Image (cartoon, rainbow, N blue to C red; front, side, top):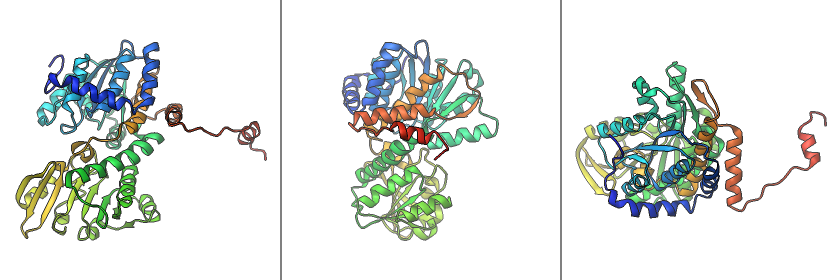
Length: 414
């Protein structure tokens, strides 16, 4: 493939309007774009990105290209691509390889297309780009480093590093304090519940919502569900997180105990087969199943199809009804894929403003560093700079230490 591969180039004008709308809520990226235009910190660099093709991602791409980078973008999920945004970026000269609803083979072909541009830097979402790069060593030549923005992707990278298989330095953007707070907790919390409500039209008040996993994403989902009047039940394998859920006022139990009572099930673990055949057999009629994890493995969709006597596709947009042998109906949202992007629009632009600002600054930082292969942390000063800039954009002032307070904190003496 050469150039780009988008569904309909005629959608470019519509997509450009949506990108401009998103940029209005992304002041931190706006300030970065102004500085990058003057300093060109990415001049001469080629960036290969595997990300959700949304207006917010387009805003990040514009910052990078303004800073001098040549960007080649593939989608990180076939159902999250917004074709008008892809067309808008292609019209601006970005090598976009993304169409909504592509097959698995087409998806991998798009990843190969962006890697064939011989990138210096990577932007990954879920580690698929890095995984393919390692499966095809010839494509790795010239790649200096990259960043990973998801919990699932960082987990995969750490596993690769532990096995000695990771041949590149990768920076774990997902592990920053602002990413976990703003994107994972508040972004995933709001956008996941938004997606379930859009898809089902359900009233959460008075229902029992079962949330698998109480990491930052699970915490955010639980907060939103309880805020809408739901009873929240949490399942966890980590004792510390389970204790946190209890102290937050939620019931914590096993999935086997929760399934007969749950009305809505949302997985947010990063693991596979969290909801499986024995759980489907015990769920009540009309139970809703949704996944907030990056990959479509948390709900065992194959087992669900096997246990079903009939699948009524698309009883609502993004909802498939599975008829069980005893007449119960289970409702699968977005085919078990990442629900907030497959059935809604993902994180609000103001959330991605923070996340993408960290990524842009980290790429800039990587151009001046030579790191060893492995998983690296984002420098603390980048995290602080983004938080400080976001607060300023919101009109929030920070307290300042007095000279006496500074001396007190810098000395062990009383």
